[in-house]
Length: 182
Image 1 (cartoon, rainbow, N blue to C red):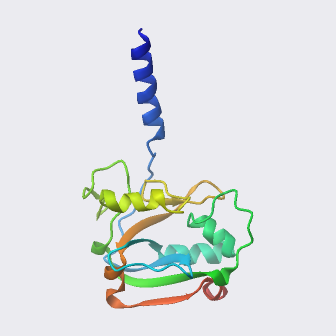
Image 2: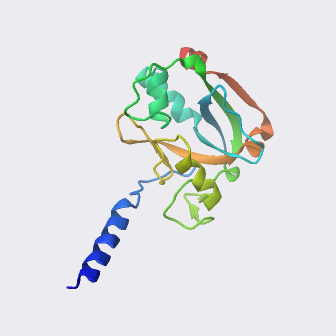
Image 3: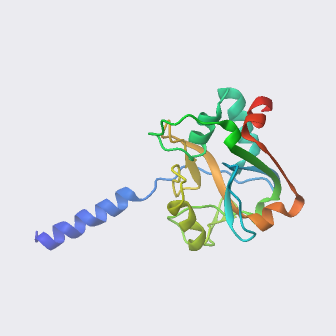
């Protein structure tokens, strides 16, 4: 075997090893609520895609785990595993939207944009880049957010343009208030 052949096979193996291994996703209902967790200082432009999780799943997890702000930020992939900082829940907010599933796309890297996956299209390339360039440490490329503390997949994640998400209004509250009443 030539050196070139060996290198080619090795590179192909590495590329396949780096492909995300995606688990099962569920088809969302036609109408439901999603949540965007972000720093209080973060704003979104009308056409900007934000990452959201299904509110009922998020709220259930918070109750079951009696999660604090740091656990929440790990669960939605906003903190790296190595994060040693103390988290002030009041520095984060949760925004809840009532949405139609047809407004969403899935951030999955290994499929063609626009292709349907469990009832939702795969996000376009320009929407995919945002998560890999941003501070989203838990981005998997599989349509889920990885819990950066446990390294397991956690919530299914969707993308939606801010301007579309606010169609039926929204509610924003400090994360600490949400955690007190979740």
